[in-house]
Image (cartoon, rainbow, N blue to C red; front, side):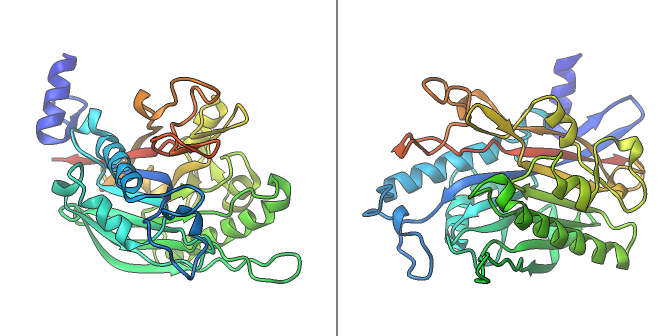
Length: 345
């Protein structure tokens, strides 16, 4: 029975829960790709360390190995179930549009025909967020980037990533995607907390503005939030809910809250797991399974080949550099994903 189920999925990309009901499936993914920089020194950003003569000896050989690694991961997310790579992919820690062009044109992804949405953020490290989409599935209509204004104790500007919102049509249905990379915990969690609170407020403002125009708008916020699902940015500002049945109108459902409570994570630091990489959705994506696309389930993508198999960091994500040494790995984060399903008559 299981083999028949998988074959049907692979051939037609439908999920059959009964003989009378079929569902189309789309995969949404997010991946912090850990410093996907080209090898060119940009005089406007602090990318000097990631050049051939910089601290990390970032050569073209290492760059193209990184492109191969990341493209391999992206090509596999959700494939076990759907037989295909994700339809929508959010990315962070990418330097510029050119690295995205190189990524989608790698043989692992080239035949997927991904389009690119990218905007240069003012982040001082020169890293941005971006959205990749299969052009046969999604058509972007409106693209906006929202600037997060932060200031240090002396009143100087703290330059960080913009929040990118893309509204478009997924198989004929309007859906919004927000791609995030919130301020890091540099200097300590407590000291840096106000920055993420402000990022959450900006995210909430974006969501509220969309819902003001259309209370039933379907919106998906994805990213590396540098906070866990239980932190104040989520529970007090965004007021995310971890149980579907408790989500009320205009509230947000976060399926990763349950995973976090089980001790699961997308990155590890000093033998402690965090779940900074998350995807949450508006109630409109969980309320009516027969009204277009709806949330089905979510997960953390952590196959063995992107897990460190030995040494001090055994069990951690297999990253590109460990302890300052090149390890030929992937990223210090695991990707996360969710499935949308749509009833087919």
